[in-house]
Length: 550
Image 1 (cartoon, one colour):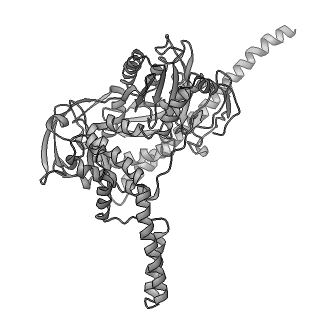
Image 2 (cartoon, helix red, strand yellow; image 1 turned 180 degrees about the horizontal axis):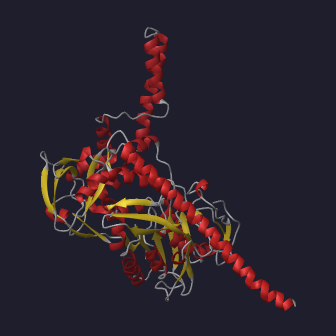
Image 3 (tube, one colour; image 1 turned 30 degrees about the vertical axis):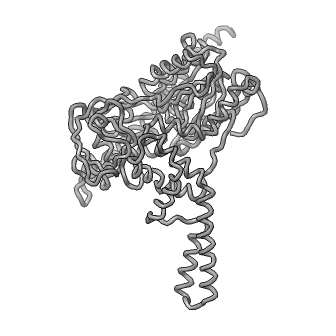
């Protein structure tokens, strides 16, 4: 009898569950249909009765953007000119003239022309200021608008009007756009007889090949330690992150998982081959607040698998997967379809990426996880380094000079006076020249409290300008600030010299030159070199210890 009842009730339970699920799904899709009808009714009513005639394309785009803005920051609607970054990652190239652009003080300038590109071939130089694009004033455009106008299909032409500080009159360059291949590895080389260094600035289709070449070259130079610099790397393609990890970790290791609502969104990636980098080669990965997405997958997997140490600052915290859906040949929508999970099970997205009121159910994530070797790590967003190095804050004058673009402007104006970067380094009077340059600038440099002093002085003058004792006191304080500014200028001369060399190195020797100069004063890099050079310290960094706050 019991056996008969079991045979009867089991199918009945299954049927009941299926019916319940079907009813639930039916109710959900009925709500979607009702919402769509409501949206269409409001939309049609607005277009048929609104007092002014609306532009359908502009209004529709704004409406869709209003919808996506309620979701996470990475779900976006894109039209043709906004898909450049995705094309750059997936194709590894774009149509343009081959220049890296900078934007400071409302001025667009050439950071560096790319080797072999139309701009460099035509004679455009680092430090050149772009005044016009096709006779349109750059100052009347946003940076993105101007950059978009410079880009274009291979074979088309663009006219750039350039101002060069060493020349009186502007130059006009008529350039034919070509396919520009972007270099992902901005520098790789040996920092010491045994330590190799690679800096990767994005994860595009080309990244794995470039990293393979860099790793192979460093290993051939007998590198016993490797530093992988992912600072300010915003991420890119998941496939590139997986391919790079495949060169680092043991075959068969879990690398990253994606979990979402659709079948295609659920997948686990494993390393498939023997790693290029031998197990006895020590690894350090550098990250900071600008390291996101694919950078966090690589650094997080290295940490979770105890394959190396992570140094720097806590990473950005982007652990959401986007899928691009094409609407037509000019429009597409990029939607977050899954979450990233690294080998320990950590979800690296920083919390509260969407308002809970839009969710029918919220996924609760664990907070404490363990690496392969048993070290505890936290999962509340981002990757926390094994060794946190806090950057030294800029001093008061140097900070204002940097913020106002004075170091860069001075380097631009004086670049033509030097034949090489060595000449800049050997110029003992360069800080004095810079200080004279500062005196000629319109923007006022104020020490802490000086702005408030000027406000008080103005108020006192408005109330009663005849009070001699008060005016004398204010004048005395003003003299104090003038003396302090002079003293600060002297005490910060070392930092001022450092920033001047940094800007000149970029203008004279390009991206690579600027990077190498920056590394000379890089405390995070210095710490990595110290740990890698000491086998005992390196190994102890991978041993389970007390958990640290994330």
